[in-house]
Image (tube, rainbow over all chains, first blue to last red; front, top):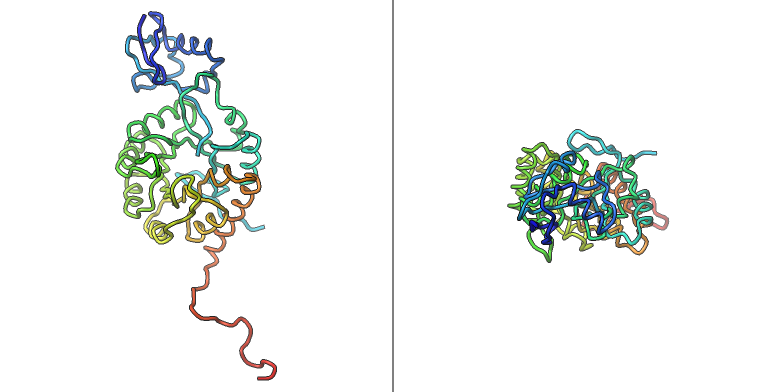
Length: 72
Length: 259
């Protein structure tokens, strides 16, 4: 199982997991994630929302998943 | 009733010259009421990693997106590359191509890193972003950011969240005289008079967060900030009297009874 980093934390994912699959895994653990309210970066490159299901993740990928919060 | 002329940044017109942050409110309902009382059109937001709990920040779900323009910041970034990444992520989040650029240089003072800020500003402008650049009150740095294509330069009155007001009015004045882009005093506002002072100097607007969110009564403070901004805007245009060392009587000096 490939080891990747998600928001700075190491985790294993099933082989063949896509960005869409990873978001679904996170939802299973932490509750729903509105796809319109998140943005994803893999290895410092933006992954457009429409391509989540087509973007496979591989060993050592660095994934950032962000949203909008209050700030100044 | 008279009201200040609208603010124009990057070809867009805003009715209010106050930009208000959405951080640090104790309850979202207080934030909503405070934003309403402030009269602002633009509110700043931050981009952060999705937490373990998933979902989105409850604060944001209370914001009326039809009423307020959301201006994403790059707060918390300590180098140009990260700030550029955050700006790109905010664009992907549907927040458009406006960004309040912050590249910080020191964790204790949260003062900006001028070199990183300039580098990120150049990159983002080249990528089509409208950059509102947070900077120190250094007049040369402000000029450099304008040259780099910033749509607005936003010097700090004093460190973020410090409530010390405008510590160096002379530097802010020099920036205001030197720049053509709108200069918005960002950071350090502690109370309403700080906003008035910034506007009396001739600032195009004021950006603040903690001054409202951290007040004992944020809604009342937001109301005060709105009026303080108008007071300062009108006072600047009205033209103040010079400061004199000695008195100048307001009533005629001749014809006094018993003269």
